[in-house]
Image (tube, rainbow, N blue to C red):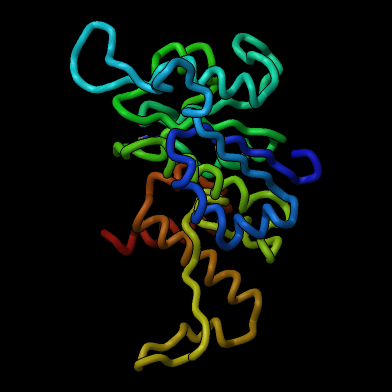
Length: 254
Ligand code: ADE
């Protein structure tokens, strides 16, 4: 990441979908502070022919429509200034598709290493296979469900990356404490009042003993992960004390 700036180019048939999500909150601030630039390109602007068609019927028959390769390819080529196909030095060209690699926090972190990222939002029944095979360098899915297109997934990926760019979150430690950052779910949070509708805040958090608070938070993160996402524990960074606490939770279950 060059000085903590990521340049995003998003290719879509529905650019208007991006205006309000990118115009609010942390993403907007990141752009205003020059930490990220977001440019949304309308694939239709690169379609040729009288009708500016961006989709067509599938070869071999069957229902539905397929996004044509030319408008997408032309758009990417124009924005990059060269045809990226087969070149080793291209920025990641990510196709959002339910067939892609499942998106994770680790992938978000890896992607912040790039100065530039290009995201292609698929629509309709799919995108001509040649885009996937020869133009895209990566395919990402945001989960095992099917959305109407890659626009919302692209927003998810951009959001997850932007908040990791240094200086974007107010508190530099905030991203490090996140759920998933350390391989565990995050500990519970409380703020004033200490007693709300009869529900108290755990005593230890009011004690002012930082070491005790840290220990409690670590244990709650472990407990939560153990209860909700035990699959994460296999890859989490665990100390001997963490393992002993988990063994204790296991024993309590029996
Ligand atoms: N397009 C449609 N569904 C999707 C998903 N789950 N992830 C990425 N792109 C998609």
